[in-house]
Image: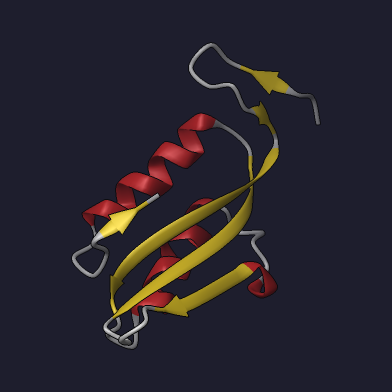
Length: 91
């Protein structure tokens, strides 16, 4: 694979990139986030998913690290995440 650097981003693609989404600890947030990310990065492995609950257990943050191939791919993932009603924030 060749490296791609664009003026839109300082990242060199492909690169490892953590995607974090947060929402209420509803029990299915982790599945929702993983499903969305897998639609855009189907080669993501399960061991690349990390979930943490907030101090009081009300919220959950899910981080999925992918091998990102482009800014367009990352933009699509973030758009799908923020469009989902269970996701309150994506970083």
